[in-house]
Image (cartoon, rainbow, N blue to C red; front, side, top):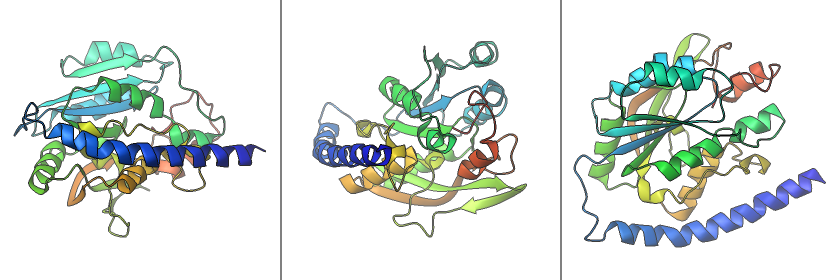
Length: 275
């Protein structure tokens, strides 16, 4: 019964997204060309980060790397998924840059109980909240433990501007068994880099994170679901063959992503887990 319900919900949402997003895209493009909307050489970038119990990593590693960007016109919106540790206190005590804003949601998002299904969509609720609050002309996303290279914003933005792309992504490295491995998406079709390399126009904010993508039988992670919907709607995309981010191994493991989730699956649901 549950599998039939999941399939029904997934198919209904897929149909809804396909119709609505394909309709909205040309309208938003047209609005962006209005004489009242003047393109900027150095527009603001909004970087949105969902987090849960990662205050130490955020303040000691993630945020310092962001602040070292060669491109400095940005804001950072960090949205806690009702953190149960001292993340709010650490953010107040250690981060003094006014461009970095922290908001902790009053209650945790409703996610599937199964650890694997939960990983597919966790963070989608705080990300949608950040999406609503973002003030930038361009949107970027990373997980709360990702490390941005200093060239991240500038390389992606200039590449997007030069090619008149709406959405760009790039290569990154990730850690497995102590080794940095290159992920350049060269075998992917279409060639799209990981979420930590995305940069796209803010008028695409109507593409919300799908909190129900775990119900699908393919592209179940919410970032895969989102990029697939953008491709189907016809968003103009480009790929920059340059490394702009690094994904360290998840604490307590030797790997990242779903492999790390399986290693952590025996822990409490309140334990830090990869966003």
